[in-house]
Length: 624
Image (cartoon, rainbow, N blue to C red; front, side):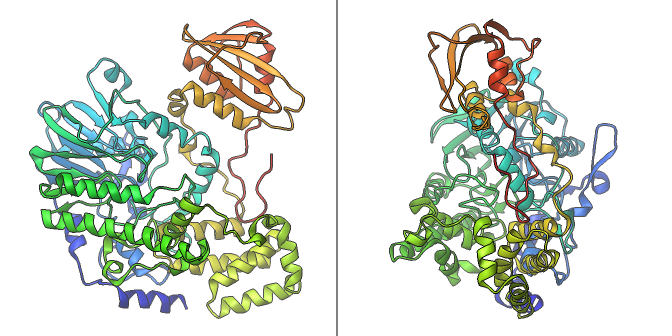
């Protein structure tokens, strides 16, 4: 069944069009020495060959041919010339590192997610271009794969001394930090599914090559150097190392804080992550706020209006550029139209009474857009993007009373198993569905048996088999990763280690104090807090006065001090944030206390840190 499904893909898409292969190799200068990332001592830290596939030849049976094609394109790794004064290090990481040559130095755009990748990108660039100082860093938006490696590119000392500017769209720091804090534990755990972080590298069964935006690379702790300059409005211009940049604000598109920009002297346009070579997410499967696709469409239209008749090269922090004005206009227009079609068609069906699952099944791109390689569903998909449109406007509820207060899956599962005739009967039905190639149905009904009887190995293994077949057929790298990660958990249990980027001291340092207060409230264990009443004032940086009050098992904060606090804590923002985030008040933490010092220890003792490696498919999630 899987082989036949994948053969049909070969018959429906224009695989004879090799334009992208020509563009992905255009301007190639050199690969990374040894095709591997190395640390400062020369030790190999990541072998790039593990995420590369042959760039000629057919797809293996265990991979959708269209996904194989984008994986081939993401296998061209090294330093590339985009145009005069613009170079990119591609496929050393999920994101490109872009180098823009100013009059006196080099401007680095989006320095990857991993410090090891960023360091090797800089070394590769300077091995082939004149060595000059890095004069600025530009973050196009607030996602970690566009700033996490910055600590290997510039130093805080040079930024503080005014030697290097760090430029970002307004709201960057707040959005960059908040996404990794409030729901960060769940989001990062889910990222292990969507990104395939716990899978082996490669194109085989149960392996990952990445998310199709780029390779699945190193996972170093994130670094973050906060911006020195913010872009606040569309049309704003800034001269950076002799080059004039004009900006377009695009908040609430692919990221809450995002911007496009144009360098007129180079006729070079950057659309951040808003027009890549894959259909993007209106809702990202790792979990995040649903995105407003109508805004996304508006920003692409604005981009065409501002620079569409001028640009001669379009480059982005993912994948390869587009050259030629006509090609650029067509690329952006097709991207815009695919988004607009999904948005409008989903709402058309919603207004006719169709529900979210139905819309995910019914919305299909028209033939004019379906064969456009740049909007194939490698990262986002039409199915989950269409459902995201419904959710954005109408939420999760269909208005059917039967869905108003459904039993949670863990409570409903035993009843479904009984309804289907018991475990053996359900397993028999699932096996027949699997044998008939009806893998979606097999996986769906087995969910009830696995939840009802998590120790039932036959159910677990059969559901894992169904997940794998669905993964083999998936055009979306993200869906393939999720299916394989689920199969792995069913067979082998939970991963043994968390990814390296789960630990990030830099993110905690950049946390505004209001977010630290919010985070502490999220961590409060309501059972532990029963009957407790605690009020603490904070004097921060010698001037700001705030208060925290625990009452009714809820922690509230105010910008005004309380009149009768149990304790007043004085110290720097960094010291206060460190104490709240670590869960320890500490006598030597740079804080001073006036009043009942145990009040802070007692408050911090009412928190519970949820486990990171919680189960997703094998048993109900941790409760607390």
